[in-house]
Image (cartoon, rainbow, N blue to C red):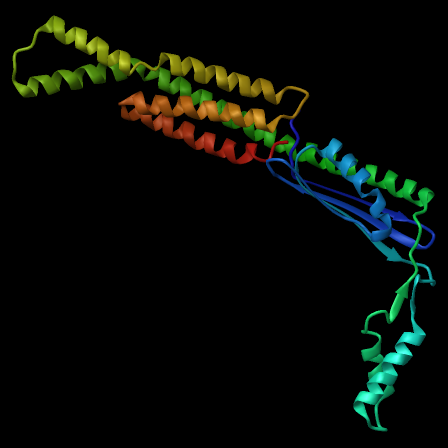
Length: 288
C-alpha cells in the first residue's frame, strides 16, 4: 500500500492553565526535512520529538509546531518595576521638561531591555506525558491523511498503466504493417535511383536494416516493467523511490520504441504512452 507524502495532522490538549495545539504538515521531498517549532521550556524534548517524527513519517518536508495559549489568570512574566522606574527617570532627564507625559515614558520604558522578566518554568513530566500522547495522536492523523491521499494516487497510477498497456498492444498490432511500409519505402528509394540491384544482396541488406529496427525486446521489457510497477503498488511497503526507478525504465523503453518506429501510426501510439508516463512521473514524486 502506497502512502502520499502530503498530509496534515492536528491535536488539541486542554490543561489546567493552558491550551496546547499540536500541528503537523508534510509535503513531498526527496528526503526527510524536519522543521520543529516548540516553546523554549519544552526544548529539552526536541530531540525525542524529532526521532519520533522521523521513525513514523520517514520522508517528506515536515513542519511540526506546538502552540501554547495560556488560559489561567496567572502569568510567569512580570514587570521589573525597579528597572522600568530607572528607565523613566533617565528619559525625564533626557527630555528635561516638567511637562513630560509619564504614560508615554512608560510605553518607551517597557520596550527597553530587562523591563520584563520571565521566571523560567521547569518541565513538568506529567504534563509532557499528556502532550506526548497528543503528539502520537497527531502523527496517527497525518498518517491516515497520507493513506487516504494515496488511495486516489493509486487509482490514477493503475489507470495510466492500463492505458500504456493498451497503447503497447496498438504498437504490436502495427508491427506487420510497419515492416511492409519499411520494405516498400526502401524498394521505392532504390527504384528511384534507376540502378541494377542484386535481389539476394538487397534481401540481405533489408534483413540487416530490419534487425536494427526490431522492437521485440523493447516491447517485452516494457510489458515486464508495467507489470512490475503494478506489483509494487500492491506490496505492503510504500517505496516511492523504487516506483520512480521503474518509471525511468519504462520511459527508456518507450523512447527506444519511438526512435525505432519509423511508422506514423506507431509513433502516434508512442506519443500517447509518453503523455501517460509524464502524468505518472508527476504523481510518483509525491509517493512516500
